[in-house]
Length: 196
Image 1 (cartoon, one colour):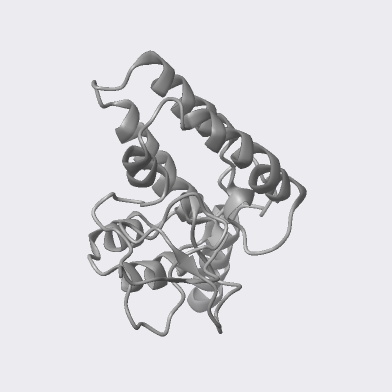
Image 2 (cartoon, one colour):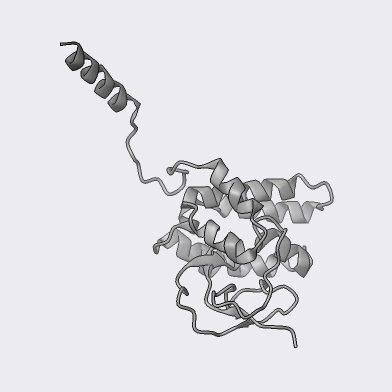
C-alpha cells in the first residue's frame, strides 16, 4: 500500500511540474544551459568553437548573442548612433533566426533585414568593429586560413576570414551546417584562403 501511495505522489509531482510545450517563436521556449554557452565562449580554437556552437539549441544561441549585444551596449565608448544600431538588432533577434529549419521570419531576417542592416552599420562602425561585434560570439578569435578540411566561412558574408578576407568556394561536406557569417546564423559553405 505504501508503494502505491508513493508512486501516486511521485507521479502527481512529476505531472504537476511539467509544462505544456507551446511553440512560440518569439519567446525562448527551449531550456537554456548557461554552462554550455560559457564552454563555447571559452574555446579558443575557431573550428572547435564552431562545432561546439552547433551543439547549442536555438534558445542558447539567442541567449549567447543577446548577452554579447548587452556587453557591447554597456561599452561607454559607443556613440548614440552605434547604440541605436545595436538596439535595432536586439529588437529583431528571435529564436527562429537560429533554428535549423526554414521559417518565414528567419527568411525575412536573413534576406531582408540583415542586408539593409549591414549597409546601415557600415557608416557607424569600422570593419574591424563589425567583425568583432557581429561575426564573432566572443571577439577573441578571428578565422584564419589553412589547409583545414572543415568549412569555416560563408561565401556571401561581408567579413569573416580575418586578414585574408577571402572565403573561397570549396567542396564542403558540411555546407548546410550553420555557424558562419553574421551572428553565425549562416551556413559554412567556403574555406578561408591563405594570404599570398
